[in-house]
Amino acid sequence: MMVINKLDSFNILLICVRKLLILYVNIMTCSTVSSCLMIEESIKSVFTQFNFFIHNLAQLKFSSHNEGALLSFVPKTYSMSTDGKIERVKLFSIQKRYTPEKRYIYIFQIEREKQQVPSYIFRMFAEFVEFRDKLAAMFPLIQWPNFSTRMVLGRSNIRSVAESRKVEIEQFLEYLLVKAPEISQCDLVYTFFHTLLRDEQEEASKLKVAKLREPIISQPLLNTSGIQGDIKLSLLHRRDVFHVMIIHVRNLTCRGTDTPSPYVKAYLLPDPDKHTKRKTKIARSSANPTFNELLEYKMSLEQLKYRILQVTVWDHDVLKENNFLGAVYIKLHNVKLTQEQCQWYPLQKLQMSGSLLS
Image (cartoon, rainbow, N blue to C red; front, top):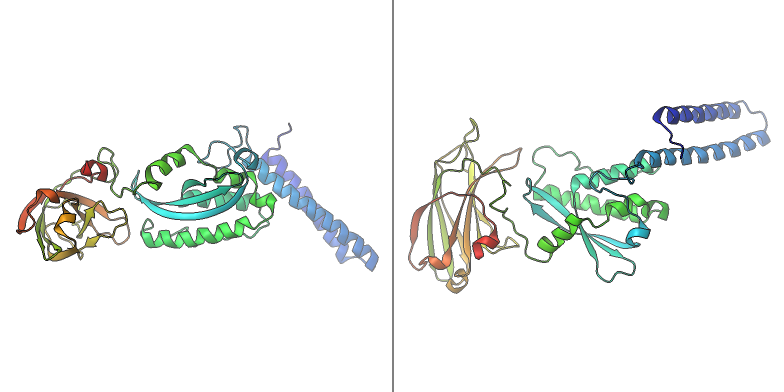
């Protein structure tokens, strides 16, 4: 098989451009209508060949001897014949992850011909951007929609940005899937939507069970080195309302020379949908802040027996991701909540919900 190197491709491109220029000059100097029409027909033919030439160059660019890896995160090339014809693609949902750092994952539901059960793939936004850019390079004559949220000033891994990206991804999918089969069913599309081993693992652990919002304690998922400090809480249940008073925090870790600007979040675990999320205001530039803020939950004492109060302290950052400063976990069935319980609790690392509830 003959391989076209970059120099040969460039030379061929120059020849094609030169021919187009000669034909254009001939048109401008043409004196009769009949000769103009003949040249116009020849130009159409050359443009068609030129279009195929560009497309073939793109195919050569993304085809390689290592089994045609079209995408950096998929080791092989897949097609409609290997995976089955795609009938429908839906952006199913987005979920937050903490490994190896905080980010959002986009979950796609794939329905294929002659498959009764849909499959799910999990992709990062950067991977979707790579997919879009490869399509644009492979089919350069198509005006592919771009992502306005590709570059975001300030914090990018936040819910509002993820929601905006979700809308743009849905619009891109709608634009892609109505294209001609040569485009919408090309190998690059089927390679992107191929179910990887990581997708199968994600589907088993994150899709069919309640999503764990806390990272596993044994993994260095957040910057948990040097956690120190204590938090003073007051707990009381009265008239079917659980009162959590966030009073003080002391001796927080300072990041370098910067004094933290802490705030406190609270959950009643298990809570996969964040219905019990509460948080305080931000205390600006203080390692020993006083909050004196009351968080309330309308919940019976019997229900509270099966819950764990999670209280976390975070350092607010305007431009970057908020820094984790420490957590407290209180199994409420061990606490006599009919009487006020007020004490200091040492801050510790984040823990996985499953290990807490066992």
